[in-house]
Image 1 (cartoon, rainbow, N blue to C red):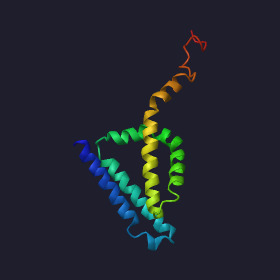
Image 2: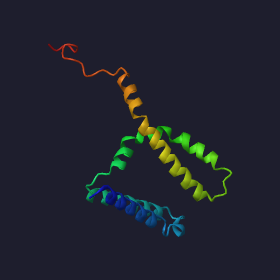
Image 3: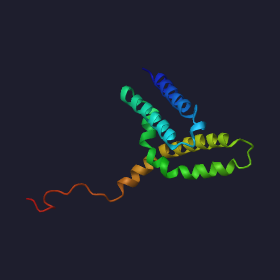
Image 4: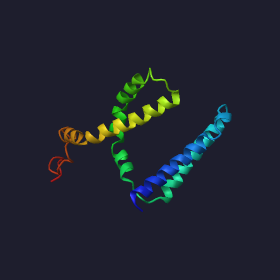
Length: 139
């Protein structure tokens, strides 16, 4: 299957999860057990998707490889975008979607471009390989 078909199936799965999660959640907000059941259902759908899908997606592989760097730098973009949208006349949901999307795209782009720099820093960190047998006293 080509990458566009995989991306379309992933998008479809995410849309189904969002629709199932938010379809009738408002009446049950007061009940923690219903919220936990819905969260478990979403995780179950994700687990089933992971179990029965064997295709790889380059975009998700890149996201996985850069997740730690994205986590380190996303706060800068999130705060900056929230501040930039203070005077914009949008609903909170619209602003949240813009901040989430912008933060994700910008932090992912910076993290992917920082990969060569990080590998240089790791090379000069002074980590040593496993000691030779002579160094640990076994001859």
